[in-house]
Image (cartoon, rainbow, N blue to C red):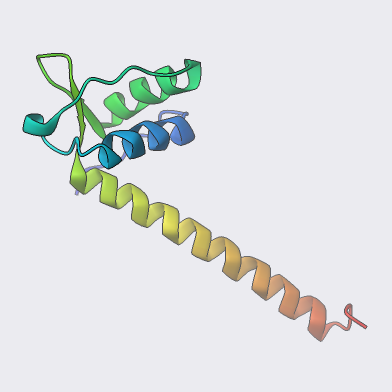
Length: 101
């Protein structure tokens, strides 16, 4: 397993990868042109390229590495699950301390 690189624009990187993935750009043969809509997407594209999540072909088109995309999605799901668990534990502690009277 290769290390993921933190590049500082995780939200933009995910948005760019999601757009390409949903357009079916998941291999060099299905790569598509990608024009960033705004500054955040330009930054996200640079971040996704640096991390290897998105790959640029010689023809100047882009595609998402499906394995890295799936790992990104799993990390996002775990982060949400852990966040919900922390909130539930905090609520249980407050309930046991009698804060919900």
